Length: 152
Image (cartoon, rainbow, N blue to C red; front, top):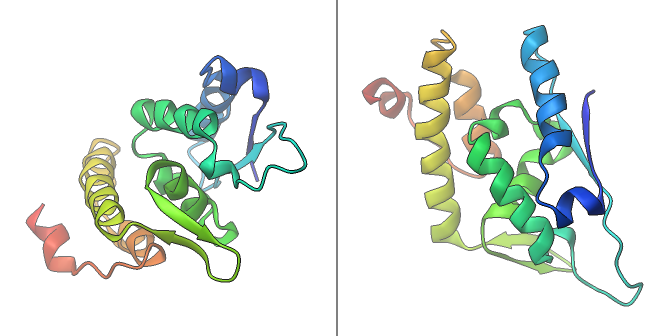
């Protein structure tokens, strides 16, 4: 399983090179390998924030998403990478008992934007199936009818 290792220096410099190297290798292989993130970010032991609540980390992910807006498609959803990725980009609250609770409207906008971007990317890759894209939206709690994908 390819891992994107993100260190504090990359975060501080908004350097997405560590991600680019891994993403390019995965795309060159043309396999179904899925990506995971390993984030190294020093915090004070008393800092209760999750990584997705730290502005510097979120900004790094915003930059990454600007370059690779279709990246959620190749993340390892089974290991929770899609939820963590969405948390970096979508306003949310974190609760000790229930976990992440996304802002409903913000998540809805995120999902629809990803559908449009990934759908275009799949067509450019010569992939005519939207099954995996539908599954991705389901992971985020949305049931999108096939008719909508046909409409696109």
